[in-house]
Length: 344
Image (cartoon, rainbow, N blue to C red; front, side, top):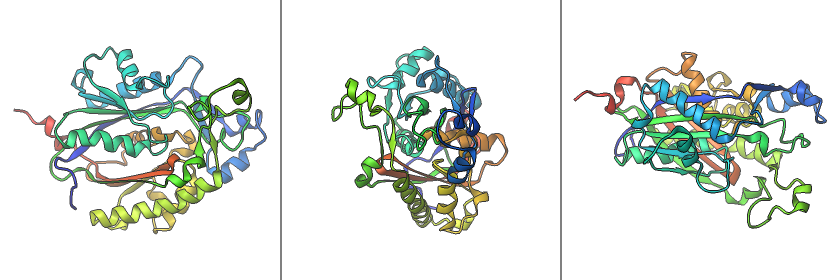
């Protein structure tokens, strides 16, 4: 396995936050023309979390970051850089990373946002954060991905409101030794699919006038068929390319964590490369599509469940709006693998 980084980078810990409110498919039957049977058959989703009116995206991010810090056994003062990977920030400007740090009382620490269309954020923002460790710029980087999707969907549009959910995840990154951590990363985009999943209104191209708001252009719009076709084709492509780049046979990969858009996309995409569904880490059934937050939340739960132990190899395969896609191969690290854990 050839590491493309000068310095190995590992995930010291992950963290999560999930709103308390659970919205089931039966709840949705009461507000939109759909059914539990249809949602389950088409997406595999049974329920999702929805933030309370008093919760903001930054609040969820703060809680996920604190959870990750606690799990890592470090203090906020040890974090050298904060990156937000959210696609649903509290404000259009400035960067939400600074808002989260403000709420945490952090001062002097740099922070910025990585916008990668939401769903690919679980890989794109992780990749960006890792490179600051790899080149020696920083020792400890926090990548926080909170997504408040319930505020950007039209709850009268059954094609989108049944899919999305709210939640937040966080990665804490540090340098590792012994060929552990991130092994290889590859990012890509298919810009011709830009309008397959997007929010039409709110930017310079289509400002939020009263008429545009009345037409619901401030909400997320998606061409479900195009996204489904893209997902089921890009998952096997990413898996094969990552296997070739790392010299790790697909059948030797312990787990595959794909973007949690739809259980059928995950299943069909992995079947094309002969991966059984049992090797997939899946949380879409109980949380819906949490965009970029899905990956760190799933990793956190896999660790809690005793699945993701040191030495396990996992492929992260993300795709979504843009249309963008990205993959990361990593070998899960033991606490003793982290260089910063060594005593002088």
